[in-house]
Length: 251
Image (cartoon, rainbow, N blue to C red; front, side, top):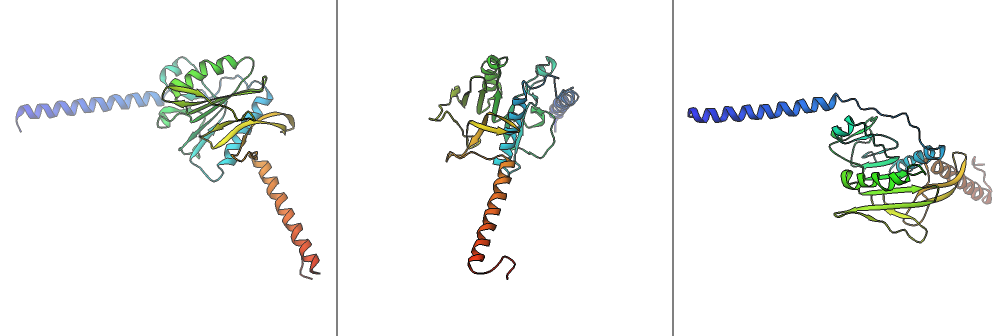
């Protein structure tokens, strides 16, 4: 190898080493960033807190046999260093990320620790003080930066559900069915309201419905249904044994 060739190889090694060192330094700076997990501002109302947890529970119930998803609520999403520096905290009321390890503990969703994955579904629970931001600034953020496939916003004061799906040209508003429900392709359910008692609060709630129009039960409701079904089956067997002149102890 000539001296010129040796020099060229050396320069490539130096350049590659320098580039690698720069990347490592940048990663180290990212790891050292102070990332708050709360801003001290509580959820709007008791309803907002319960509703958020209700949606989280419904996803766990919907995908109870899966672990390749993460569902969060009122959790900060960090997507750029500039955002961190500006303390421009963004924490959707509810979001779902598919095809990720859902068993790992997280205090925030940090993009550079998650392979660059953004939420697939976001739901904001609006109030009189947030509705303009939810339909304006946040919608633009989720559409243009996050590229979140589906964004829903529920306004409990007006009992109105908004929804958009992402297309190559941006968000397109979803059309509700005749019951006012919106289809979530990402979750394979319909979002709609339900009136009833939940957590001792009797009011309207945002719930999931199956394609057949059936209300998806919460984990507590599903457990109650299973217990009732088992009791009904036991009763049926006892009645059958009684008709045969037998008891359930074999006598």
